[in-house]
Image (cartoon, rainbow, N blue to C red; front, side, top):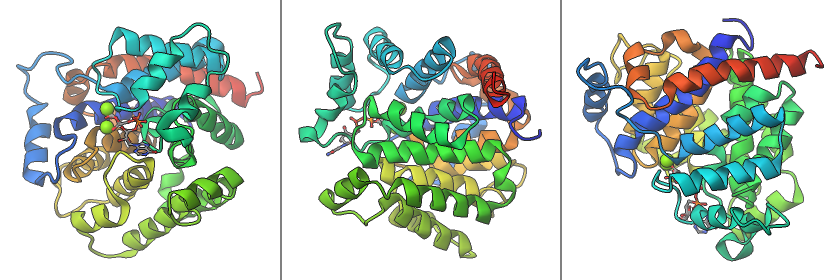
Length: 349
Ligand code: R7I
Ligand code: MG
Ligand code: MG
């Protein structure tokens, strides 16, 4: 489809759900042989399996809250979004939330809360979380706001409801930017796509709070930029092993160790790869490759799925995969409403 087409919106939202659902199988595994990944994915074609047998986790549970809030409020409303996170957690606490964020979600249900950002600031001795929980749910921001500056501003605020450390919320900004650009067709020119991400993140990470956090955590001056430069080096190599990717970019629950990794998965899988079945399309390759990295597989596949889905569109997503994944059909339906909101805003409505 063309720029910001309905197919791309559906692809982004459904791609994220798929990644979360199929990635759950290997979450926390140290390394996953590709053989096991392919067996798992081939199993999804089994007709005898029931609908929605692969349940979504916190990644999708929170993304659904983001979607519902953005649609209901026709924009970003921090009170409303915080309330939805808290309510969702109280109704289904067993979706695999990060161990730290649970405290935030409990505090957010309190009715006498004057500042919805305060519970997040109290995390980890006042530094805030650098986990990838802000980034894993951020795709809907890119689907609701056509302006790049709005995507940056609101994805940051949305992440700060639970992640007040810049190494957490800047990861969300990076992921939102990647989905935004992919939606515009920017992955047709991968090198320029990456250049654009780097130039945007150079600006984002120039802020004082970012510099202070990076210094305190003994990271590079601009940690996400540094990772994006490493990513560029990896892309330029003719061959790169899974071990090298894990070593250079990471596969963990920190946003810094997973968002650049997810972007790499998408870029690496734009073309056929020897290690992957030749009949796989780009989205299937991206999913398989993300799972093979091990570590935080549900979240890395979820983020890669959103970016890849925005690029390839809904048509390439196997029907059998859709059927197996809880919430995938619903995501396809709600994507239409985000598409309408986006184009209404784009026309200044
Ligand atoms: O970031 P968050 O929402 O977790 C998301 C992850 C995804 O993989 C989901 O699929 C789910 O499995 O969890 O939750 P947080 O609790 O804020 O952060 C996740 C973890 O990162 C924490 O439980 C800590 O182990 C670690 N972490 C930190 N550790 C030390 N110091 C995050 N921030 C810090 C920190 O500042
Ligand atoms: Mg999860
Ligand atoms: Mg995860």
